[in-house]
Structures are given as structure tokens and as C-alpha cells.
Figure: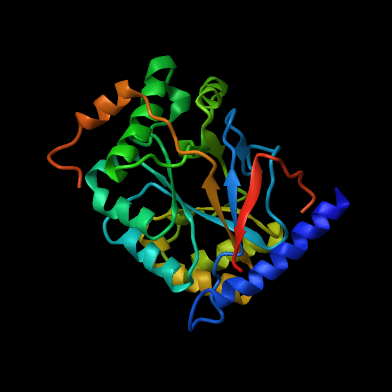
Length: 283
């Protein structure tokens, strides 16, 4: 175990150096230090705010995640900021928004980011029972697939982080991984980009690493991203890109329900786990 840990740490150091080299003309860019592939069999949970089983991050490694998109102007502003650093993120998509703005969602995928789901309508699943909760999950997943013209990753984040056990169990039966966070930006509470950047960096400084939750739906987040990414790079953080071993499998019943909504053409000491493996580095 110790030998494997040392080897993984050395790999991450080398990858971080290569990540800078992989962004031509931008030696100080974040890049991507590692790409990990997650086996979602059984619905593993990630993010120590709620799920304290799997951890695949080394010190100073972060995963950038965004909820509630796609959305006009703000999502592409976030994408442009990520492009400027040649780095990648995971987007948890609301089904309705996917069908409203499929061109933006396709752009998210085309730029190499991972696409997961975030229910059909951002409903609080703790307030729903049985078939209603199932429909929110499945219809949202189907909507994302329809908008993308391909299956997304089987990655899911609960709206409001409200995760009733019966729904967690259901997602496990569907082999859909669930994601909380290690650092919540609470970006929706900010109006000033500088204050948002300062808050996120302060929280990361205390945690040392982690999955960062933000919202590409929020104007302040879009405005803050260039400075936030610059600061992350300046302080030596390394971005890990999450991918899935297999795509999500949607259910025909909910594919049909989602299609019926389309109006016209769809335009640090934590245990690691074998469910996650590094599939590439920045070299």
C-alpha cells in the first residue's frame, strides 16, 4: 500500500509539470494533471461532505464541478475560462435546461468536459416519494441524452444535496455514482466576483484538496472564473478530470417522456478505492 501510494504521488507530480506544457503558450495554465475513470457499479458516492468512503485525490488536487446549466451566456463564459487554462470540469445538468439549450450542452461536451445529470427540474427529492422521485431522476437523465445525442456519464448530484436513502439505493441499483462536494462555493450568495474567489480559496486552503461545487448558472461565477483559475494555478493546485468507465443507460419509458417535452428539433489520509483509476496524465 505504501509503495503504491508513493508511486501515485510521484505520478501526480510529474503529471502536474506536464499539464503546464500541454497548454501551448500558457506556461502557467492549470491544465489537467490526471484523468480518472470511475467504475459506477453499485452507485458509489464521492465528496466528504456526505459520502466518506471513496477518495481519489492527493494533496492540492481538485475536481471542478458545476451545477444547474446549461444556461445562455454564463455557461459559455465558464467554458471560455476553462479553455484559457486548458483544463476540464464536470457539469451536472438540469434536464429542462438541456432541452431548452441543447446547443450549449453540446458545446460543453465538445470542449471535452464530463456531463452528468441533476434531475429534470431541480426538485428536492427528499420531498418526493417513489415514482415521483424516480421520474425526476430518469426523465432528467433521458433529457440530457436527447440534448447531447449521446449518453452522458452515470454521474448524479442531488439538488440541495438532499439524498433520501431510498433514492440513494435506487441510484445504486442503476449503477449511477452520486457526488456531493468537499468545498461548497455558495456562489449564489455572492454578488462580487472578488469576494467569491477569496472565499473559495480560503476554504480550499483549509481542506487542502477536494471536489469544488459551483454553478455555471450564476452570473457571478462566470465573472469570477478567470481570476479563480489564475489563483488556483498560482497556488499550485492541480485539476483532476473525472470520467466514467461506461456511459449511463437510460430507460425507454423516460426517453419517451423527455422527448415529448421537446418543442421542435432538439437543438490526504482518506481511503482510495479500486472504483477509480487514473487513465491518463498530462504527459
